[in-house]
Length: 152
Image (cartoon, rainbow, N blue to C red):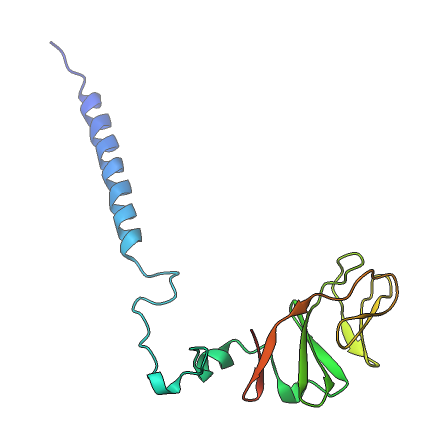
């Protein structure tokens, strides 16, 4: 019986390749790269929690805007959220997506939230003030924590 020496080499290469794949998979499962934290963060002291169970530091990290940056009778647009202050101390959260054609509103001026696409204007409470928009901007729940406006 004759054996081809190259057959052993092919088997060795295939076996080594399979072993490398298994080793790489095992190492990837053990790594912390791309994960938020390798160890869980310690829980804050119980006396530092608000009634909703959140800590002030957690709320500050989620801040949409600082209250001082939102003028009375105006507002700011941050990502997909518009935050207005129609009256002193009253903050309103709204979607930044216009209800007419889905464009993003781009400014809050002259007491209205303005969409550049077709001229829709919304009052600071989100109701339609003019233009082709068929309905108000969608409400988004916001609240004030300290000097920040946060979601929820």
